[in-house]
Image (cartoon, rainbow, N blue to C red):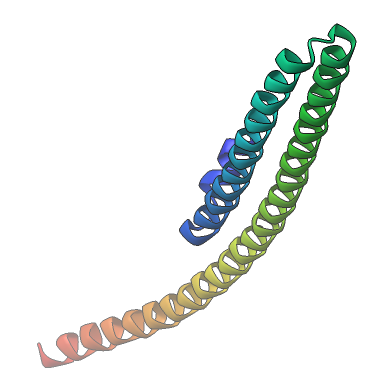
Length: 139
């Protein structure tokens, strides 16, 4: 269902969504690179310090930072999804209203055309009757 709603988004809205996702992806990649650098620095410190306890502490901190980053990323994705779903629902409702208006206008135009047709048909029948009377008189 979400993919159907995405298909109804305008190109600009889709580009905005893609831009935000790419921006978030780049931020996360930058964070990952920073964390990898930090990890490399911690590995160097561990090898220098040689302390298993200190290494465990550093690794725990790294995992804690990584988990926090992952949680933030997932939260951002959930927020973007909710916003997108709200926009899609709003657009869908607006489209339904427009369809209803178009159908209503179409029905009214159809009724007007039917009335004009009936009027024109009656005039045509009257003219045809008059022509037949004139033909009979001229014979």
